[in-house]
Figure 1 (cartoon, protein in one colour):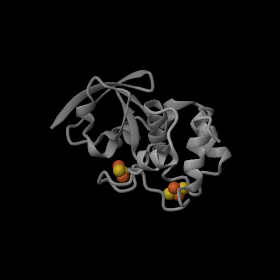
Figure 2 (cartoon, rainbow, N blue to C red; figure 1 turned 120 degrees about the horizontal axis):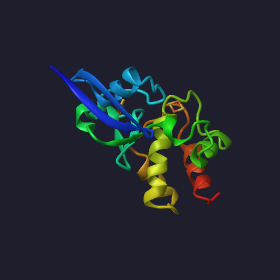
Figure 3 (cartoon, rainbow, N blue to C red; figure 1 turned 45 degrees about the vertical axis):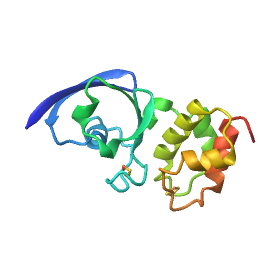
Figure 4 (cartoon, rainbow, N blue to C red; figure 1 turned 90 degrees about the vertical axis):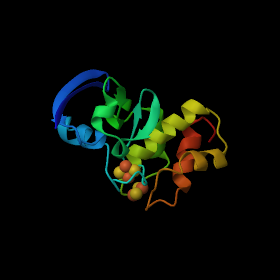
Length: 153
Ligand code: FES
Ligand code: FES
């Protein structure tokens, strides 16, 4: 069954007629060609697909695009056009990535974390990012990057 969905993505209103079973992450990547949002597991475990919906971080593989009808979505591309968001800069400067596969989702979760708690402890950072899996870095530099973005390093 086809359905028309309209939402705001990175400040622009988008509308498309899609299969009602289309996942939000598929809609973002395939219909909108915003491929910074990754798919690592498709089962809501890895966090690679994390976006912000109505100001809250969420996993775009765990909802249908039609569930985002009318929503305000921000993807990694909407955070800054050129990687200049303080969290992106901190990840770069702290070498908080290796393959980079987890990075967009990790950054989106980290931004949410600081929005909720601008001065997190290391433990709170680790807890806040526990829905995002990184197979490369060992997490240490990711934690450092979040501390730096919070002005604590
Ligand atoms: Fe969504 Fe892994 S792809 S959590
Ligand atoms: Fe490779 Fe995180 S940098 S999975």
